[in-house]
Image: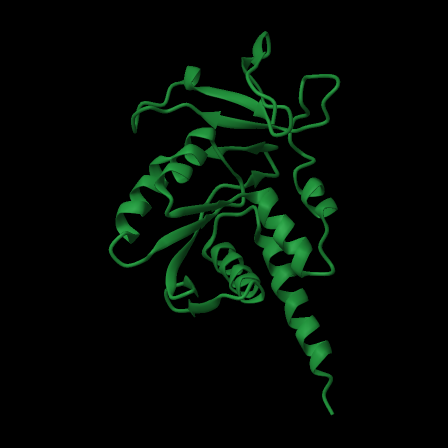
Length: 210
């Protein structure tokens, strides 16, 4: 008799491995492997899932409410040792697109979200955001072979925080009020742990404590 537990474990390991291999590249395969992982995770969370392989779209259903799951394109550039946060413009567009069909949408990014994006999602009440760290938290909860140590290993290439007492990592944020108006001065870095923000090596300030 075939050991169904072993088959299940093999399938789960394959899903996770494929995601980790493609996590920080921008390809259709990377998007598919992320959606495939999310499809499995949401099932474990008690959702009914509708995963269309042809269109690479994922819908999750719970309590008769339908949510579109969207995957972002940012991540950690392992070669350049950089990570860029996503702003609210994409969220606003998706909010309008999905409003007539879905009760809400879940946006999953292999990178991070700016404070502006988080505030927009909070005020909309239709949007759930899952960033890189939260995704690894879900993976470590539902898969035995994944831990938060894997998350920290995946971002170890990023620049260390410039505060001596902080062990956090720095990521880039774009300050954009209008589309197509990005300037060099609009770009700053901040620490994922302590919230320090700075615009260049000689001019930085701590704006919040996370």
